[in-house]
Length: 191
Image (cartoon, rainbow, N blue to C red; front, side, top):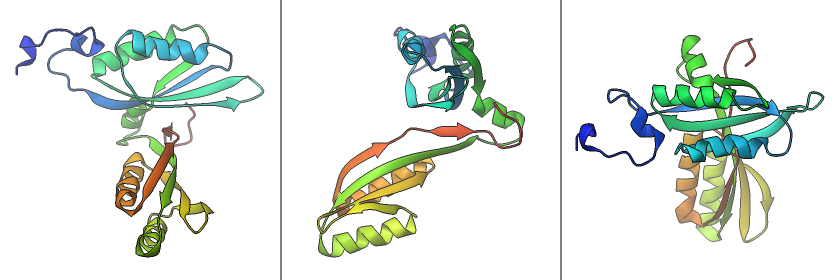
């Protein structure tokens, strides 16, 4: 179906020019570490129909009471620029950096992105041996184990974690907990 025949659904994705294609971007937002800030940032996304693919938040500068929010979202360049400008207008936001755009400015394809997952696998016999062998190949660590299960810790790009989880499914995958993306640009400059 042609994009001209689509009817707007209330989503900001229809604001974009027809020639622009949606793409994933990683945003880094430096905010005051105070109650309600995260809710305001998330409210900006949900209120305008933007989707968040990944969200990670942590205090990064204890003395200054600053937290860093890392958001992976999808949209056209026009929509992503709108998101960035709207985030900058929220009062306790100190800085907003589109790490994806910044990495392109530095001649790199993407920022450095890592994610951590805890993966519980239950099994005995051959499946248990195979799960251990594959975990070793993926450089996953065993952080808890007994005769009936393992809990693996694995860190890497999201695609690596996705692949590890898919391989563990037939071997007795029970539960998964993922952190979301932590990201930073290469080089000596800060955000």
